[in-house]
Amino acid sequence: MTTIEKGDITVKKILDCIAAELAPCFEACGYDRAYAKVTLSNRPDLCEYQCNGAMAAAKAYKKKPIDIAGEVVEKLSGNPVFSEISAVMPGFINIRLDDGYLAEYLRGMEAEKKLGVEETGAGQTIVVDYGGANVAKPLHVGHLRSAIIGESIKRIGRFLGYNMVGDVHLGDWGLQMGLIIEELRDRKPELPYFDGTVRDTYPEEAPFTIGELEDIYPAASKKSKEDEAFKNRAQEATFKLQSGYAPFRAIWKHIMDVSLADLKKNYGNLGVTFDLWKGESDAQPYIPGLIQDLQDKGLAYESEGALVVDIGEETDSKELPPCIIRKSDGAALYATSDLGTIIEREKELSPSKYIYITDKRQELHFIQVFRVAKKAGYVKADTDMVHLMFGTMNGKDGKPFKTREGGIMRLEDLIAEINEAVYARIMENRTVSEEEAKKTAGVIGLAALKYGDLSNQASKDYIFDMERFISFEGNTGPYILYTIVRIKSILSKYQEMTGKSLEDEKEGEILPASSDGEKALMLQLTKYNEVIEACFGETAPHKICQFIYELSDVFNKFYNSVMILKEEDARRQGSYIRLISLTKKVLETCIDLLGFEAPERM
Image 1 (tube, one colour):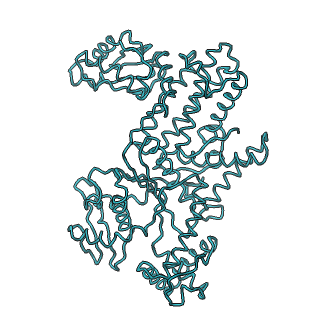
Image 2 (spheres, rainbow, N blue to C red; image 1 turned 180 degrees about the vertical axis):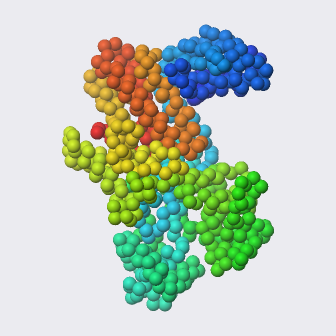
Image 3 (cartoon, rainbow, N blue to C red; image 1 turned 30 degrees about the horizontal axis):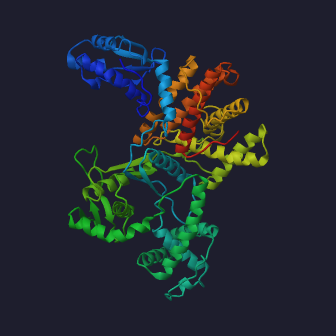
């Protein structure tokens, strides 16, 4: 018989705790302990958890599964962890937890710094590549998903103890630079960069604003499609820049400074930060040696004038094209740049894992890059390289999201639009000042936008529906925030009524559930550490969204069935307060991992 000691179960996942009770019983009956695996019940009307190990053991031990299940259940008779445990046909073990054990588990969660989540990543570095913006261009809705998903993955990994290094990996080295330089020459030929003289110093102030720069690039891009001579000039300017020509390097530095300031502001408005603001340019010093190394190792060979590396493997279900390392005209490609970046990251960070977050169209590119990196030995054979592919954010017409005029919407315009819609909704039932309403709208708007994205499985396309995203009901960010604000309000009123400080209060503890609604809330809370670990292991933030939506739902049902502030039994009321405080902590931790926060009131 197992006794429940405070502290014994705090760092274990609830499923592991239950399995730990079953394992010695399987063993005592002559069966392998591994069969004691426990899962959540898919029939909560019949039981809370179930073990199907007897079904698998039956084949190994040539016995009826119901007989095996019956033997194990008999050994568990009187175990205080369970209020009910039974063997049912054809061989399932159905389990309900004892209310006292469940309350003890939650008290253990309360006592833990991270509410029972283990820091499993200590000593391991993971690089998350999740920006990919091009300099000299404004952020638009196409940059939204990589930024939101990447920020969440980085935060979750950090919470689990990993050294997470987020890199924006800017597009800052291609033909776009030559296009900008030549368009600038046409507009301002008097600038010192174009008089043919190489100087030691150039003006510190950029000869353009971010607004002008964002006009220069599309104009140059359009001109290059219509004017072959201009396109040739741009290609020559790009070559001179990449060869170190000082005047063009000075312009490039201006482009970078002006663009980075704007990008940092706009990513900041989205609540997204990076540890590294590196770009393709940082990989360039590694590329000549990389190409030579691939040739020396016999991996790279010429094909139709280009230098390529075969990546095919026997297990491939279809033939994959070789990775082009250098084009026939001598130019390097994105694959070369990404391989150079991997060499740089190995040298500076030596990560145990890479996570690249881009849209699905780049699937082949990353298969090629990862395989070349492994074949050439640039990363260890056991280094995990993950390409987290995401789907498209679509409009209600099912096509990629556009402005009303049919163009690509700027990210700052999208954020402003969703904030205005939330502000209008707040002002419909105005209970706060306009200033507070605007501030609150910004918090809720960001939650609506991020949750609306993250609640979808990353690989799937989804419909951007403003009205649904900003709704205070259903599976939305505002609904989660509303739940947190409701708990804050209850706790504040409790403090006013009793004069007790919630942080300092030592009295009271979470008691065994007194109703089905209370137990449902308790059971949902126990899933917390399991969900966080699974979410990171599967790079699936939508699992946290689903968890907190279900948690909010069971909390609100509990709230509507119990008069917390009118409860006359002080001990029971104190238990309710501690339970909903734990619920708030779990919800607040989860939304922080998703990249947003809750306001004080709504």
